[in-house]
Image (cartoon, rainbow, N blue to C red; front, side, top):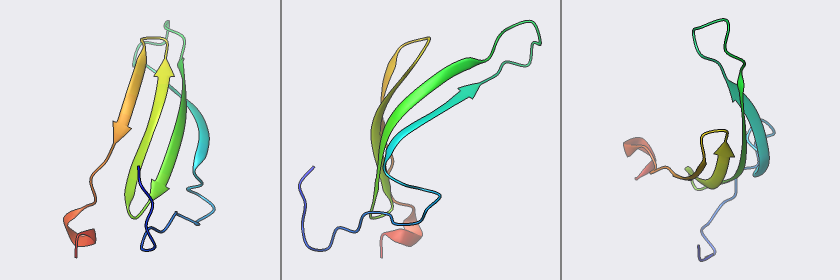
Length: 70
């Protein structure tokens, strides 16, 4: 992604860009929770990144919400 002067990286402490990890759980109690890891970037209301879990790898890109588009 290219940078320009109007790009603003998220500075809120709850949403830092970088490594994230978590888990998902099925409704069935006998299955263990699945672990996930992501490398996320928050900027200008858009989230991009890569990640993986026990199923495979993924790419992530979100569009800004209509209220953020101006």
